[in-house]
Amino acid sequence: MKKNLLFVFLLIYITGFSQELFVFTEPASNMPAKSFGIRDMNAFMYEKDGKLNYHNMPELMWGINKKWMVHAQGFISNRQDGGFETEGGSLYAKYRFFSQDDVQSHFRMALYGRYSLNRADIHQQEIETMGHNSGYEAGFIATQLLHKVAISSSISYERALDNKPNYTFPLTESNSAMNYTFSIGKLMYPKKYTNYNQTNINFMIELLGQRLNGNQKSYLDIGPSLQFIINSQARIDIGYRQQLYSTMERTAPNGMIFKLEYLFFNAFR
Image (tube, rainbow, N blue to C red; front, side, top):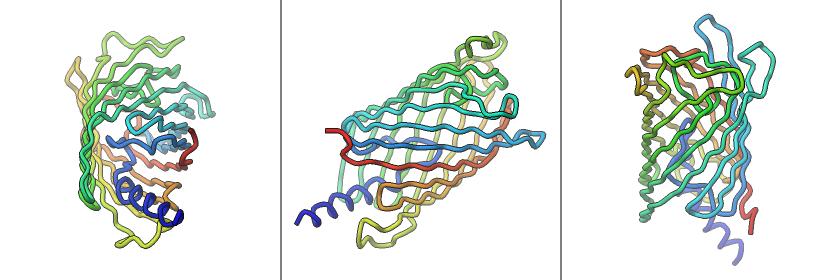
């Protein structure tokens, strides 16, 4: 009886959430309540001269309850002198304030915020508080799940601060921006669930854009990706981010993303 109940619970979890775990963005849904997760993101981004920038971003994740989750993330890079250096970190929180559930579908909305500290040099007009700029971001996400397809969109305000102790944000550049994203993903495999040990394969395409408030410069990227979810706990993401257009200076907009993640259910009482 207990095994049957566990299977039903996990089946609901996998079918309800797996295909809305996007690679480049966060959905409005949260990780399971009282769960703990570890994630490691690896970004291999190419500069115009062909130089490879490697960014490693280890992350700890905590599902406090069904409405709140928090992340703590570190920033490690070889960009400045070719050797690996810890450049900073960030705290991220998300609050899901609306949920409408139906059979094989749901609609959710959430608010989120990020605060980052970074001590690397300021080298581009693009504002990115996840790995490049000290500053903060606050935004809104809406996600719709329809059977095996998930659609998600977000909008946020982002503000860059000085990268202390050595780098002041240039007064000639825009220090704030509006970000917008649109993501669509589909569960490709399995076609039918028989047990919760089945590997999920999701395919998704995401659009990521930014418009600087001070000078109206902007960019738009596209990010196709594949996602594998194993035993409903382990996750592997493989994606490629490609710039579609840009009117601002960006150091290394194109490259591969590789993520590993593992969840521990009921880690906290």
